[in-house]
Length: 290
Image (cartoon, rainbow, N blue to C red; front, side, top):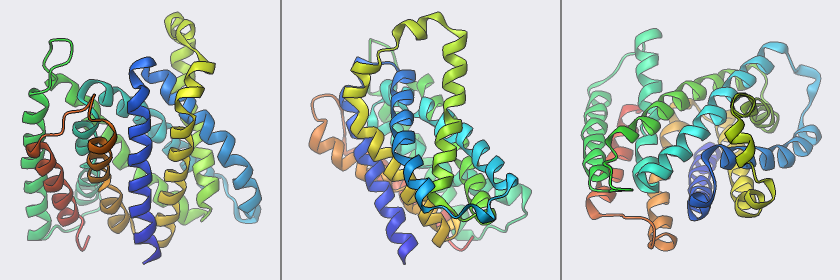
């Protein structure tokens, strides 16, 4: 029960952070946003991790897996998520990201020979039709005069990366059950993709404005750090198949908060909201009894 409550709270906290980022996302680049949020999280998480963690059972394998999961998510996923949010809008982007438990379940089905029931396959069909509906909604959104279909790749690839990262996080927590430490390590190694981009591009280095971006995104950075801690603790209490569909209810919270606070910059049609609900329902069916 504790894991379920933590997973739902993580989804809600993440949604609030997403809305906070969206309010100012036009004023900064995707890389800068990702870097600031990760840095704020690092400054918050490491003192807590050092205080709470019993390092006597730490092993190199768990450290390596936490690190690998961090490079994927939040590292690469954060770049893909915020870029998709800029291009598609918050509700569309978050609803497509919510399908990531599907990737996790399908990978388990193919590589681990886990059996799907008829209910699971029904969930896959629901998610498929929900994704088509979201795609139709995205085509109705026009930014800078261009259709947004090609930008659907950002949340689709990001969702796949997030699904793989979820499996790695659960494996790492089974090796060393230290959620806050795991988040801190993941955040640390999430900086690797950002640093590589900075080193390879003069334009990104010139565009860096730490003072401005810190002022705009520090609150979202704290919110995301809390989100990840809640998600890691949820995984430490419950199975991946229970936690991931609950966390994937984030788009419902995003839609509600976007309607309340982003009316001037977001479009949330009844068709899109129905698609979000259908996506979440499909994800829950896919992961049922797996």
